[in-house]
Image (tube, rainbow over all chains, first blue to last red; front, top):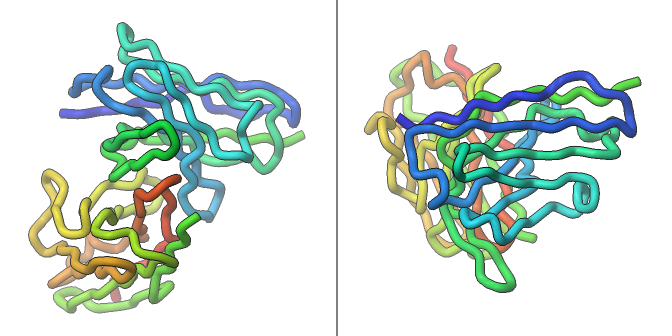
Amino acid sequence: QMQLVESGGGLVKPGGSLRLSCAASGFTFRDYYMSWIRQAPGKGLEPISYISGSNTSTYYVDSVKGRFTISRDNAKKSLYLEMKSLRVEDTAVYYCARTVGYCTSTVCYFDYFDPWGQGTLVTVSS
Amino acid sequence: EIVLTQSPATLSLSPGERATLSCRASQSVTSYLAWYQQKPGQAPRLLIYDTSHRATGIPARFSGSGSGADFTLTISSLEPEDAAVYYCQQRSNWPTFGPGTKVDIK
């Protein structure tokens, strides 16, 4: 049974940092892209970052580029999101998700996300 | 960026009724559209991928159809546990989700 478990969320002041982790089990972790998707309170779903299975390619939405860093450790079957210079608008539940799809040199096609972790809440507030 | 629009925003139906949810894209996404169910306080769950393929463990009452820019998720006979928000997602370029349709069970 595929499973993803996130950890690392919490309350942080604006400008602060946080590191999220996601532990995977039940599938061949290194064979898949992985994603971080966030959901602000009462809002919709926003994919923010992806990483290739081989750890060679990463992608970010403009709003987090330069502040967030996605990484993975295939030996530990773990995904990470390092978040710096956090802003109030980064407040959200952060989900990790196994990502089915592929990227070319110019564009990514991610068919779907399955499974998702249970989510971890990040609150940025003074 | 491809924008997805979902309608209606809210659907209120009784158990056993048929629910029809719509997802419209700002341009063609061919057949690469997925649907997710999110219950309160839970993570989204994949229901349908590639327009009409049910994900593992999804009941047969859930079905998807459509092509190009117009897609439909149908729940043939609503169960109380189907109360949730349903999101569509397209894969082209940078994946995006629709704003969701909330399904209430009377």
